[in-house]
Structures are given as structure tokens and as C-alpha cells.
Image (cartoon, rainbow, N blue to C red; front, side, top):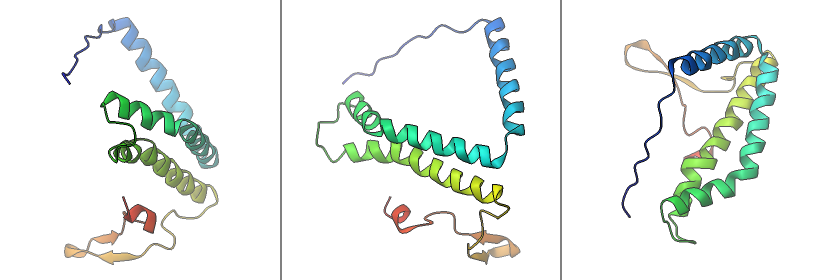
Length: 132
């Protein structure tokens, strides 16, 4: 299958300036958003991704011409919706801990690396993450 190139028009300077202004305002709102509200938002994003996960993986598979029922479809689940679902779950949990006055690193095991640096196991955190 041959690759397709699509030429997209470049936005005008005024349009870019307006978009940057909008991002700046959004960044200010985000900075003022509480950890509890951020956690709730991550849970909403997680639920939204969950509702379209199958459609997302299916569309990605079709775009790559992966045959229906092929084990390669699993890669589209892993690199797409599963990754987003895992990330939003962990982010929501971390933000909720912060909102509750706890550290997201509670119950983590710390170690020491060469040069006295502190280490903490990042991945896999769970057995499920270890199967990825």
C-alpha cells in the first residue's frame, strides 16, 4: 500500500496569534484548577476514551489495512486506547491523592542508584502493566 501525502494549508499569522492567546488563557484556567477537579476531569476523559476505544482500535487497524481478527489488531489496542486508558487512570489516581493531601508516591519502594540518586520503580507498577 502506497503512502499518501496530504498538503495542509498553513494558518495565517493572525489565526496563530489567536490560537496562542486561547492557549494562554486555558493555561491560566488550568493553573487555577484544583487537584480534585483535575482528577474528576481525568476520570471523565477516561470514560470518554472507554466509550470509543473499540472504534478507535478498529479505525487504526483499518487505516493500516490490518485484516479483521488478526493478532496485529492487539497492537492498535495497546498503542491507542489502552495506553490512553492507563494514563488517564494513573493521572486521576495521582491527582486524587494530591487532592486528599497524600503523596502519589505513598507505598512506593525507593532505592539508591550510583552517585546517591534516589530511585523509584516507575513501570511496571502492577502485574497488568508488566504484561504490556
